[in-house]
Amino acid sequence: MKALKNLVTVGLIAGIAATSAFSAPKQKTIKLGFNIPLTGDSPKVGESAKFAGEIIKNEINEAGGLDVKGTKYKLEFIYVDNELKADSAINVANKLIDIDKVLASIGPEGSGRAIPAGEVYNDAKVPMITPWATNPAATKDRPFCFRACFLDPFQAPVAAKFASEQFKAKKVAIIYNLEDDYSKTLAELFRDEWNAKYGSTVVFESFGQKDQDFSVQLTKVVNSDADFLYLPCYYNFVGLLTSQAKDLGWKKPVMGSDSWGSADLFPLSKGAVVGDFFTTHYAAKGATGKTKEFIDKYKKAYGYVPDDVAALTYDATYIVLQAIQDAGLTGNLKKDRIAIKDAMGKISSFAGVTGNMKFTPDGDPVKEAVVVQVTKDGEFEFVKSLQP
Image 1 (cartoon, rainbow, N blue to C red):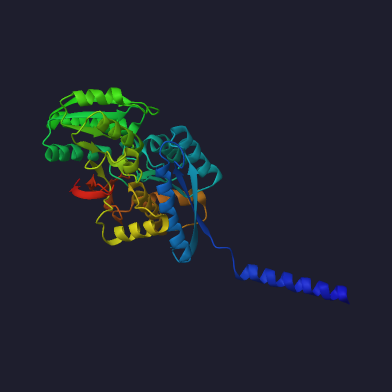
Image 2 (cartoon, helix red, strand yellow):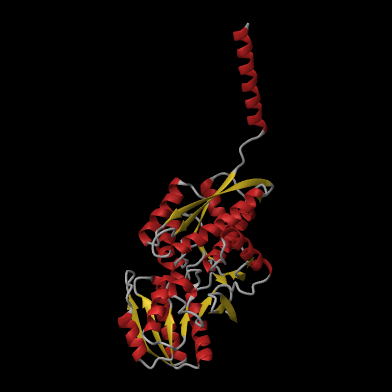
């Protein structure tokens, strides 16, 4: 009898478990990949992107999931390190596409990784949106590739115009990273715009990805009659360049690009960037509305002001989520990827934390840039909006 009683008990437990399984089915998920540099020369870029993603994921999942045409989906974000290397970004793209089976990819962030990885995503017909890649090649002739930032052919002319007006300058010195598509292209665009409309380029010097000592290039700048220095380089190099320039006696203005926008810029430069200007995607200091709400959430969660990468990744991720809501999901991965791409292409306007944007047929947003100035406290203070 005791054995029979135990058997009945086991049967009842199994029955209850089976009933629970049927009454509480596992929630459907939306899987997105993040192709980001969590290590390498600029790990802050990957950290910012991941933190922005985590804010969105946690907020939506805690509210029950993303509503897609009446069905709630749990968000699953897969963060994979591309080490800030082109070949690694390609490998990450293949992993996210073939192994993780993501619906879409956020990133790579910068142009040097987004250009080669974008070809992989486009060939596989998987939607990719790069938050921070400003080089036109990242999306050109690639219907599955989009971006959330302005382009360098816009950034360079407005930066040159601002520098001419702000510094009353005629002669510019430019130093750029020869091994980075973003830096090289932007340097050339700025040089050509400056020479055509405002004056002359008296120094045009480059460096390599592994370089740490820039005394040769900077000595040429200091000994020239340049009115200002233009540095379209990543923040980690800017920190070294500006501090070494100061040590060599450079006291004239410095103008930078959107790749300056990191929380690490000020400490890496040892304060040498105070008073300098750069073009960027949004200004955190003095922000209002939904931009301020995002900044406050980020600061509360992670303890520092979100940089451009975080804000652009936040916008890029929400653009993908809006496309998913617009397109709906069938459960057929190939069909859903194509439908999401089509829906992204049909988003005529989007109100993001980095501003309002409209999209061109090439998947590029039309949006303004801003110029900020670095304060003595290392904050990025709004100076001027630059219109398309």
